[in-house]
Amino acid sequence: MMQTDLHADSASSCLDATLALCNACGRLCDAQIRLDQERVVLVKWCPEHGITRSLVSSDKSWYLRSLSYVKPGTRPLARAFDGCTACPGSCGLCPDHQQHTCVPIVEITGSCNLHCPICLVSGRVGKELTVEEVRSVLDHLIRYEGKINMLTLSGGEPTVHPELTGILDLCRRPEIGLVSVSTNGIALDRDPDLIRKIRDRDAVISLQFDGFAEEVYGSLRGRGDLAALKQRVVERILDAGARLSLTVTLGRGVNEAELPRILDLFFATDLVLSLMLQPLSYGASCDDPLNVLTIPDVVRLVAQASRGRLTRDDFTPLPCSHPSCFALTYLLKLDGGALVSLPSLIDVESYIDIIKNQALFGTDMQTLERIKDALYSLWSSDGMLPHRDAVLGRVKRLLNDISALGRAGSHRDLIDLGVSNVKSIFIHHFMDRATFDLSRAIKCCNHYAMPDGRLLPACVRNNLTAIGS
Image 1 (cartoon, helix red, strand yellow):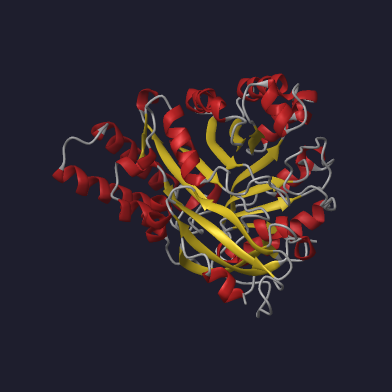
Image 2 (cartoon, rainbow, N blue to C red; image 1 turned 30 degrees about the vertical axis):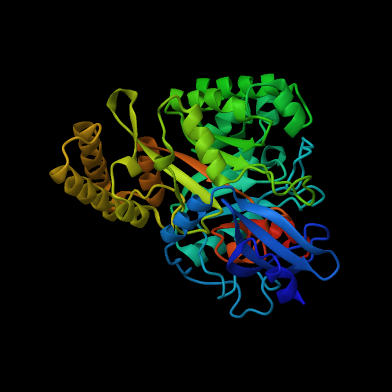
């Protein structure tokens, strides 16, 4: 019956078969990824509700081209489970999972001081972890991965945890590079000293920042007064010399017009390390799952809003994840404040090889030597590349700085060196009920680290609550 019903849609051609969630009831069901004119859709068959559809990509050419960027995953050093039953029923990670952990998320509390209408984890209240439980989580992560490039402390709202500073102290282990605190900023506005406490522990403040207009926050967060609060918090963070990352939830018809000013803020200071753009995910309900923002839409909007500083060609999928999950670009900082995208300097194959299986720009000697070799190769045949001498000088200084660190340099030192020289823009499209696709989930590199040692792919936990509990 499933084959008959799905193949009855003769107007589209099938790219792959997978398992997905029924738009109506959330039941795991058979599905196909299909071409539909110039877009890519997920077509699902539920025994109770029949066929439902969701948009995967608004741009067929982006989707098909992105498939060529996929690289083999990296296996972790150890796993929580030796075998797999029915995927994703034994998620944790099992040997069938096709990627290691690039960016682990530690949800230190389920409590939150904001009630966003768009909350991905609405209705799921996690426990508050003790410092010892966080220590156990870190021990597990280091056993699995050896080194962690970036660790995210999340919630709920992590700044309401009474032991946040103690947890940050615990995270200052030599195996852990960058630590980020994901926050809505409310506690930072009430207690500016908390900004200094986070800064003094070398952590990055990842601020939920959807724009400058009250109506944006009224729509996405249920509180229009947050617009002024966010701007105050940004000023206090920058005045304190703390490192900042901006996390933007981007909704169709809601805040696309905010992008030019958001990008201006991103480009304005070295203290803003990165920009994370997240197309709006709708949880269990979406009025029109065929009319949502997807990654190529966000790439186009960012290029248009960048005032000539970025192009669509600056963005590529993250090769270690599924191409529908992430796109990104890295921008090398030059003397005088100029920025130049690495994809504009390095051939595609070299660039993809450099960024594969890592969510942060790799600041090890091997990676930078590959960059240097790629630049030399290009410049020997084309003297018209932009910022030629400035880029080569920056890369040479980076190599010298890494050599100076020598054996005494920790993993954190290397990551800090990379962050101080490279800005990044990420586009991360979380899956909701309408877009959940098991073929994406098994390639996920963004995992919730649980106190019992399990690692749960973010979208598995957000959408399948029985597994995520």
